[in-house]
Length: 319
Image (cartoon, rainbow, N blue to C red; front, top):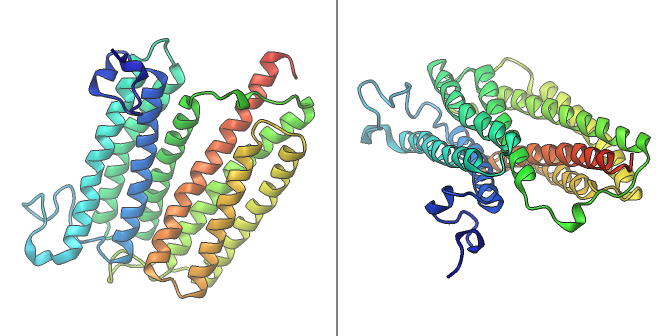
């Protein structure tokens, strides 16, 4: 008979919660990350279809009703569907949390990460409610998006942390100076990624896709906001290019993460320039938001990989 721990399913059966394996926890970590990225995509659909106030109040959809009625049309359906995704996030977050806390031997980092994600989901939903109650105030909407990015970063960290370790993950020897520079550079990349994403929300807040036809914008000139965003992007490109060069030449263990992140930046940059040149078509805006989520995943992957390689090399006596 096949043992539950060796079954091919990533998530396994519900019986997997009795004695969660690392693979079982990893599966729920991936699911956690995936549904939060999906929330970014559905949130983008809400914005570009002007469905942000499809349910004009919160936590109910309308006064006296939790669900939209026929007169609200497709906008009500889109916004309500986006709200219902929150319950999927809750279920997956709880599943990951239970798997982490029942895992043996005890993995304290997995416990902390799943707890952070689990607490972040309802808090993020409340912020989403505030955006509705403030008639989609662009600064509140910006904070809402950043809250989602924080959860995505935590979920990305959880995925990298629980991923089954491969033989190729062993860090290559590196001089202490290079190792420390790489870790510092990874932290800088992570910080600049946050600045880039934030300025992206400022650009959106100054542009046409407000989430509702009558919603106010942030009052900034779109061209000026876009230029600030572009400056941050090119700063990120420059630092990342240097980091990739060092990682590849020195054959560091985190070079794959650096190259992956560099590829994400290139693709996201192309999408950004194309959407700007083509007058912000709706589908490109949603794709760019999806790219922002991947950018945060990549930055987190890079940071965790760099710090892990440095720590492992230190413990093994390489540094």
